[in-house]
Length: 534
Image 1 (cartoon, rainbow, N blue to C red):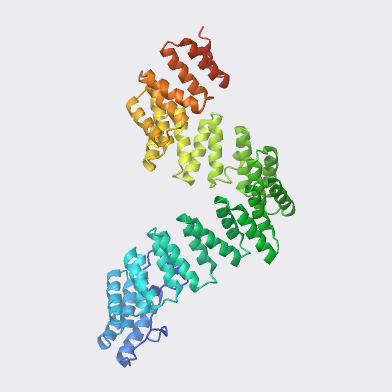
Image 2: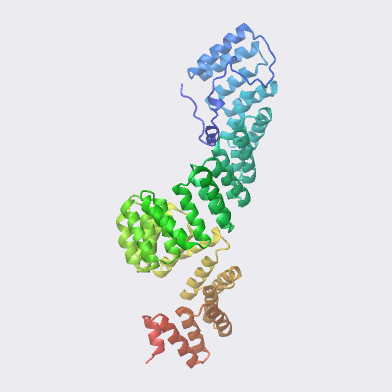
């Protein structure tokens, strides 16, 4: 007979806690029970016991229907034995009849409120059926009965996580860690929840302890140092690493973290010296390269960053981060063709790497290779379907190639996903005004962008340009002049102000703004014609 397969749902909870699901466990009268549960001794009916054992044999053979018949016979002779009800419940579960299984588990628990096996089984069943509130009730009962068994605490924590009650989940994992202080993964999980709820003080406390208890795990120290850095507590981090070095001796990982702290605290030369030596002495560890690369980029030492990026690619050709790092140098040098020549040959190798596909999309867009850009943006979106960066880039691309149905659709998606996405509101408004359509809608969108970011020069220009198109030159002038006070070297905004000046018959002022715009965008043919109309 085919065994009914359990649904693949939250069983990871039980796998994680190292507890075998009782739904897969064949119960027997001789099953051991915990010493802290008082059990009333009762001599089983011999005939009932025989039926029960026969039922067990049939269940082990997968013949659950016949097993139920034997168990029912046993039940008529020993009606109040919880183990018989749990065995019947397991058989019904395997036959795909969860309601009947639940019924017998509830009877078993009613007969014996401390029936550990029945409590575990019904908790499992409710988890698998996504009845998390009910599962929590019975797991809590198990936790109350067996407060020293961490598996129930962890299962409760995982259910809290499912309900997005991350603070409670964190506290439960901390409670479990108190029972099993040798299981650092429990403390680490609590720390991850602390990070998720942005409780940085709790997270610092947890990852500091992890750094002290597991000195061979560098990620704990890395997280702790990063948390200290966010709070500007660089000296505290330096002193902590020095205390670890004093107790355990120096190692390369702690040196790298020390260098990061020194750099962030302003001791740049010392930090660079340490990292450069680490790269030289431990050339097989890419992490030191990346730390040094980040500092080179931050210090605008692009030549050194480029050399380090080339070494990363040469030494670690299968690590996409080397190609990405070298591409960042090209991007800073505005060398889009350099990015493409580096990444295009490995784009299929790293087809699942978002950053590689996205950079190729951006670089192709910049050199107006729109078909290629679209291809790589689509690839990036397959990897990260909700990426706002990609969606924005694709919307701008479709605007550029006049595929407005596609761009409008993306803008609508963006403002639906995030009602505070000022860039989406602004770009959608600008797209409409450039097409000369739906100016009232464009004004509404632009106003929303300004409401979210009132001091954004680009957004002020957009709303000013909409008023220009609506022939409200006074408001247009106000907004665009305000935009220029925030950013006075944008050729588009200067040209817009020039157009307004022409409309209000200030030709001399208009020509000055056109000339300033042309000095910034020297190849703009439209500006050339405005400066020299004849």
